[in-house]
Each structure stands twice: as structure tokens, then as C-alpha cells.
Length: 229
Image (cartoon, rainbow, N blue to C red):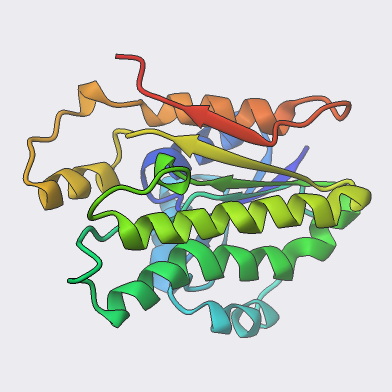
């Protein structure tokens, strides 16, 4: 039985991955921002364990983990959580930049740092759910794209640094996916949201687990997923 830690399991891709791993009998830990959220996730995902740590405050993750039981080993760390705020470079405030970079970039880097000993022990796998915006930046997507371009750099560096320790690193670049975040994006863009036009979160979960389950003689470094209709 493998052990996995997932961020962003409350909805969308993270929820799909959590259900799939639990259904197959793996041990699943879900990161929650506070005790109330942890209780909610534990109720929704029977059999899962929870850890409390707020990705919006990455500097406090070390303190939070020091006060909770941590897994002895970890087979995969799945970074799915993220936030988005659209707007022009001339409009977005420093507060928006700080919030976005904290959750989308600094927190995944810090979470990975804190859990590397467990990942090295199991020769585990780190999966970063990035975005098409992590490869190409467009108007009004500057802050989000910057955070995701940075996340690509973290993944690429980590892959080279940890190769000798047997830790695999995969970046997943989904196109528009039918999640609550995508609904928010449509609202910000002023366009009608039609979930049927976009990738099902289950399809992204399938691709992610294919990378995690790949035999040890190979690894998927980068995985781009685009809507098929």
C-alpha cells in the first residue's frame, strides 16, 4: 500500500485523485488549511487522514507540521491546490501578487522541502499540477502565469537535484478543466461557463496516476493535457 499527500482535495482535480487513490486502497493524507476544513475533508473522504497547514502562509508550515504526527515515508506528494486572479499588470496590487505567489509557488516549494526526507526514503514522486499558463502567458493572466512559470522552474530544478536520490518529478499542464476555479475564471472574463466544453477532472486524475504508477525504469517529466472537444 502506497502513501500519498494531496493538496487541493476539496474539489476538482484534487478531489478526483483523492477518491481514486482511496478506492484502490492506498493511504491518503489530505492537507487542510484549518481544523474545520480538516474535519470536513475527513467526513467527505472516508478513510483519509488529514494534516493542517495553510498554503497561504507557507512560512508557518514548518511550525504546523512540528505539532502533528507526520508520515514516516511518502510515496507521492501531489500539489494540486492553486488560486487565480485575473487582471492587467497595471491593475494588480502587491497584495494579489503576494497571495498568488504564496499559494501557487512558495507553498509547494516549502511543502516539498519539508517532506523530502520521507520522499527520499521511499524513492517517491512529486507531481506539480501546473497549467497551460505555466508555458505561455497571455494578457490579464500575468500574476497567475508568473506563479506557474516559477512552479515549472521549481520542478525542473528539483528533478535534477533529486535524481540521484531516486525521487521522480512530474509537471502536469492541464488546459481548461471543469473545476470551480474555471467557473471563477469565466466569471472574471465575463463569459458564460459551460463545463461540458472543458476537460473532466477525472481525465486529469487518470493522467496523473499514470505518471505515478509508471514502472521505475522510466519517468514522465512533463505532461500536457488539452481539451479534446
